[in-house]
Image 1 (cartoon, one colour):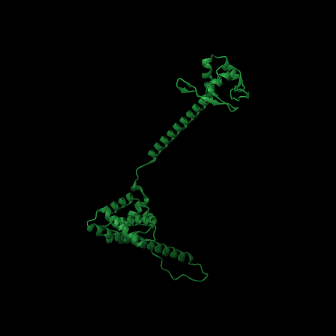
Image 2: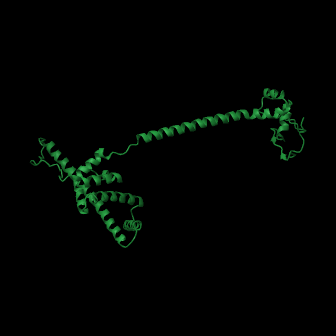
Image 3: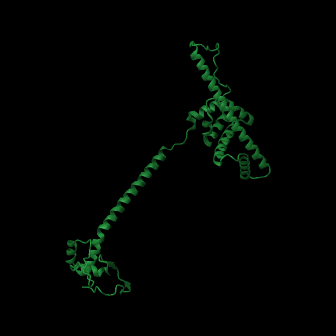
Length: 288
């Protein structure tokens, strides 16, 4: 039996031996204690202790290890102690690898699907853009005429109720068109003012970026109570409206006048157009 009382820090081949803490509180060299337990002992070998040493090795396992050769006993114990842990780690790695591979396959598949479903935008088939082009290229205002009849009766006589309500609908729609056109003109004028200020700074020999920055700074100075984010969004709309209507005619003022041709579009619809959409409309109108 190994000497259970030798110095715990004794060097063996220049390496400090591994040690373990028994359940009774005493410390022993790990391999010494394992060999001690393999001999069938279960109590602490420390003088005056004799406390039971608890272990998770079953008696059957200890008995089986006892029947093997001494050099292999320690290896087999180590193998027995780590076998389940190793198997568990292996299963975990395999499950992890399968999940990762499945994730990659899913990502690859979804990526392929995305590539397959992503098609080039066919603006020639866009009803919205084609309708906008039609309105901008027509010279006919196209306003629906309000049917002129005798004044609506204020009595309970409903003989003309549908005619009267129809006229109110048409009048309301006309007012809505006018309101949209007015707001579009305000956006246009804002953009025109920014363009003039930009041209001014360019005439002072400032570069493009510097001129843009100076213009934006001028705008911010005059609108100190407007948040930076709100102002940024508003300027983006200004640039879209001014960019569209100032470009569809060689005469900028005529481009502004063409806002009056907008009949069925809301401000939000026009400002929601992408830059590519706006370029497409400009080309179609100029060449139309």
